[in-house]
Length: 483
Ligand code: NAD
Image (tube, rainbow, N blue to C red):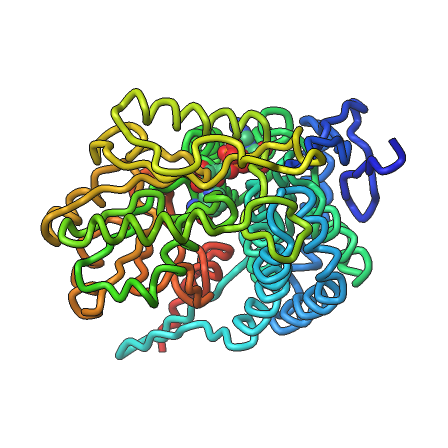
C-alpha cells in the first residue's frame, strides 16, 4: 500500500484534491499493479483552475516574449535536472522501455521548452508597407488555454503544448490522460520550484467526461489544443464550437510504410521495424500497413520477420528491452480483438498474435502483446484501414507506384507515412501524392521541430510546430497606419 502515490491537482499555486474527493486508480501496465490514485476532478475543480488562469492572465501577458522565453529556459533547466526521474516515472506509468523513456520522452520534454524559448528569441512580427500606409502585425495572447493530452507520450506531448502556449502569453489549464498522470504532476512541481507566477500553469487530473469535457466547453477557456483519438476529437470539436474557441486537433492515424523495389533493405530494415513497433506501435505516426513492391515481397517478408522476432520484449526497466507492455487491459483486449478480426477477414498471423511466451511471473498480470505481423488481408479490410494503435502490422503487395499511392490513400486517416527507396527523387514525388500531413523518405520520426506537424482527413485540424504553434497560440492583429 505504501508505494501507492496520491497525486493532487495544482491550481492557483496550491496542491488540492478534487472537491468531490473521488479518486481514479492508476495501474502499471507491465505488472498490472496499482501505483497511484489521482483526483477524479469535476466541473468545480475545472472552474477553479480556469479562474486561477484568468486571474493570472494579465500579469503574464504583460511580460515581453523575451521574458517569457527566459521562463521556458528555467523550466527546461529544472526538468533536465530531473530527467532520470521523468524517464523512470514514464516507463512505470506507460510500460515503455526505460531506454525509450530516456532517449525520447525525457529528452524531448526538455528540448520542447528549449526549442520554444529559442523561437521566442528569434520571433519577429511582420510589417507590410503600402505606398501610403504601414501595416503592423501584433501577436497577442489568446487567453486561457485548455490543453488535453493522451497517454502514449505523456510529458513529451504535454510540453509540446505548454511551452508555446506560455511563450505566446497564454495561461494554462492542463488535463493529462488519467492513465498516465505521473509526469504531468512532476511538471507542476517544476513550475512551483522555478517560481512561475501563481495561476499561470494549472493542472487538473481526471477522466475525459468529468474533467476534459468541462474544460473544452468552459466559456472562459479561449483556446483548446487536444491530442487524442479521432472519436474523442469529434466530441471536443463539438463542445468547443459553440464558444468559437481556437481549436487544434491532433488525432489518430493509420499510416502506410511504402517499400519500393529498389530499397536498400540491409541498411533500412532496422528503421522500418522501428517505424512499425516503436512504443509497442502506440505512436500515432507508426507505420501499421506496410506496402511492398510485389517483386521483393517474399524476400522482404523473410527479412522483416527475422528482425521482428529478434526484438527483446519484456521488463521495461531492463536496458536491453526493446518493447514493453500496452497501456491498459482494455487496450490490450482491443488490440487482441483486431488480431481475431484479422483471422476472420482471411489474414495469416505470421508472428505474434498474443502475449509473449515465457514472460517472467512478475509480469504475468501485465498487458502484453508480442509484435504481430499479418499478411493476406485485403488493403481495404477493417484491420488494414482502422487504427489499432498496438504492435500489429499488416503486409500488402503492390504492383506499381500508382497502386501504392491508391492503397496508402485508402483510409479515412491522413496523418503520416514513409517511403523507402534508393531513388529519393521518385520517393519525394510519390510523397506529394499521399494524403497525409507528414511523409518521410528513407527515415521515420526524423523531427525538425520547426516544421508543421498535423494531419489531414480524420487525423486532425490545424498544425502545431515551429511558427505554426506560435500562430495557433496567439491572435494575429493588424494595425494599419496611414502615412
Ligand atoms: P483519448 O481520445 O481516449 O484521450 C485523450 C485525452 O482526452 C485524455 O486526456 C482523455 O481523458 C481526454 N478525453 C476523453 N474524452 C474526452 C472528452 N469527451 N472531452 C475532453 N477530453 C476527453 O486518446 P488516448 O487513448 O489517450 O490516446 C490514443 C489516441 O491518441 C490514438 O488515436 C492516437 O493516434 C492519438 N494520438 C495522436 C497524436 C497526434 O499527434 N496526432 C499523438 C499521440 C496520440
